[in-house]
Image 1: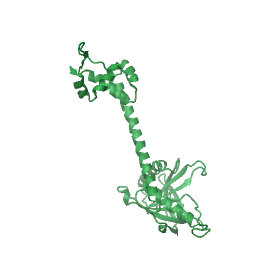
Image 2: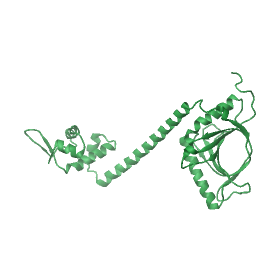
Image 3: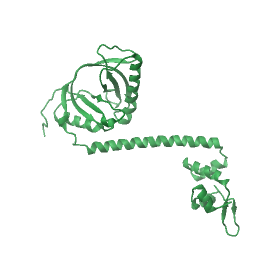
Length: 283
């Protein structure tokens, strides 16, 4: 048998914890010296302690742990409970990581306010292009809603094009539209790639002709999780120069670098109407 200190060291818990578990009737010692009161434990008791600690890690109170153990939970049932808890914790960690990433992006947007010059904005007439595209609806413009929609769309699009023997002839193009008239915030996401002007729909891929538009544009360098700051520069320029936005805009992936997103080059475009007043009018 082992003294309480020795047993605590073997189990990687504190003596205080063992005394507490004894007081609750969760793990009484194997022997208590009637004269000295010293507690002694057997190695076989490690099995019960492991179950106590595992159930505690599941989020059960110690009273609930005792009730479960009194019902003699089997090894397989306990394993199943732990696997379920592991999945829940992994999901929670992933959600926390996503929230942390969103906070970092928003912090970067605030830090970069004013560092990207509006002199980088160019108003130009885009060329008409034919694109092969797929579309789906995202709940909102939030990155956590857009990303899980647009990424699978491009994966599916490129797979279908390859199966149909269609080769893109230009960059990827994404554009956005209100999916519900703009009231509910849902967004229809279009993921496309430029194809030959003679290309017809095939392989379950829609072909769309994008007309020429006059657009305010700016080039974003780097990963897309930092694109918000560049979008906001473009929005401020449009307002400061009296233009009227004619749509939600889109993105042209001039240099898509999945291996190293920091090398990515993306042109942001917002269709605009004629300027109705001069720059900074009314200031």
